[in-house]
Length: 159
Image 1 (cartoon, rainbow, N blue to C red):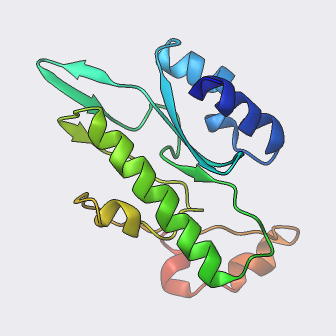
Image 2: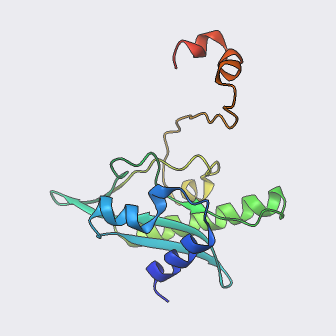
């Protein structure tokens, strides 16, 4: 099974996958010129990293896609495994992605990781660097005024 076939299977099994990881979206923004790295434990696909290599002058780069708020790896780990096992699987998956990216002989790699990725040690251990940025997610917006009131005054002015 090719990586794209594995990717399609991963998408089918993960209905919560954001639209900007869906094949139709990647085909549209990359003009059908993209690949994917998958991470498997046994026969189960636990992670994906879609990418598109662009040539800028003589440099081979992977950059964040236009119109996509996030890119990079996406993991779908078992829910009931505990923190230690979760961190271990995250590290294995991210190390795998970093090693596979190294094989692509890139001159430059940059991404805006999905907020789901809180641990990037697998990349750090493979000599990648990061500039962290923060984002905030409000999950209960039924009463927007009440939610807004709970935000500190200094931050409210910046929204």
